[in-house]
Amino acid sequence: MKRIALILVILLSFSACKSAKESQPELVDLKAEPVLIRQPYLQMVRPNTVTITWKTNAVTGHCKVVYNDLNSLEENEVAGKLVLHEGDKFNEVVIKNLKPQTAYNYAIYSNGYLLASGKDYFFTTAPDNKNTAFSFYALGDIGAKEKQSFAIEPATRITELGIKPDFGLGLGDIVYPKGESKNYDNHLFKPFEKVFKNTPFYPVAGNHDWLSDPEKNFEKEWALPDNEHYYGFSYANAYFIGLDSRNGGFFELEKQTKWLNKELKKVQGKYDWIIVFLHHNGKTCTYKENYHHVENLYPIFANSNVDLVLNGHAHTYERLKPYDASGNVDRSVTNQSEYKNLENRFISITLGAGGKLNKKWFPDPFNLEHYKDGTIVAHAEHVGSFGLFEINGKSLVFKAYNSFTGTVLDSFIIKKN
Image (cartoon, rainbow, N blue to C red):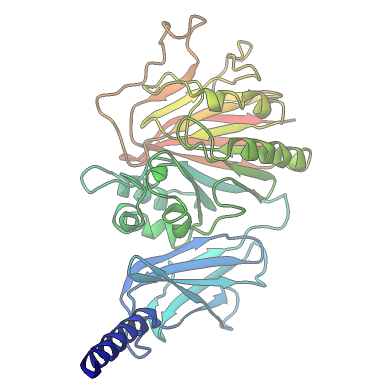
């Protein structure tokens, strides 16, 4: 009996030691110099606040950002929090009480070590008034495996633009093949690191991002407004609405549709421009099908003064003629380079060649078999591309850029009374 009791004591002791070891917090070395795995990227840049995130290896025990107004030498510092991520650590710092429409330099520190700083590390807070001209870029279907993606091309062209965009929109399928967090660094953040370090990015999820649990992948990578699947934010005199079109049906369809109607009602008459961005297309002449769950929103868009609907999904470029609430081409518009008074009309643009281009597919802008009333396309080109939008008061200028040459492949202007 004594022998059996002794064995039980040994086994219980071993089990207790094992459990204690498993429940211990992760050990860190506060004196170790962390390895910077992911360059800092900007999120939630509002008039008075900004979120800066970067990734280091697991030795990190604390982090901070030191920043200063470009017009002042006085430095400020803010401590951040650490979040475990794929065996490494997110370093996330939220800076508050900033001045609107002001440029700041910043430097990042982990465990007291300076990991990144310099003239390219800066952010500019959003304006707090509606009389500010601004610009933004948009593209979708971006990060794939090496040799399968050309994400570095649009990223490079964006840094070369004569007008620096104030932010970017991601139109879904942000990371291939299945939106896994483990692929974000190589497929997206490395090619876009020079853009993301000083230009915030607001993505929505696409069907590939849904192939891995978005709560454990997509949401983990970003700090976005509201529930991060569908959200809205303002910038100067424009309001932006991001939707989660999932794959063949909207995420939380009833709830999201109710939210969309409420959001659009809330902003009526308060902004000159309303822009919707999502992953799936509605009608199209590309190789993709017409997604009826998007077409069903046409009446909501047209009757709520939405000006632009931006999508990815098809790895090509396509700009449609103005559409009315029924999804019909506005035949009265003959000039496709300048639009005026698009009341109850909106323009739909596919920008799905941000890093993927299916060579075997070509858009067919004259696909009369599907559209007996003639082409619905104002301009289409099968080339790697992204869009740049410049808004100044009641004027909007759009340019689509070839990601390889930097040349403008399509453009138009909208002027409102």
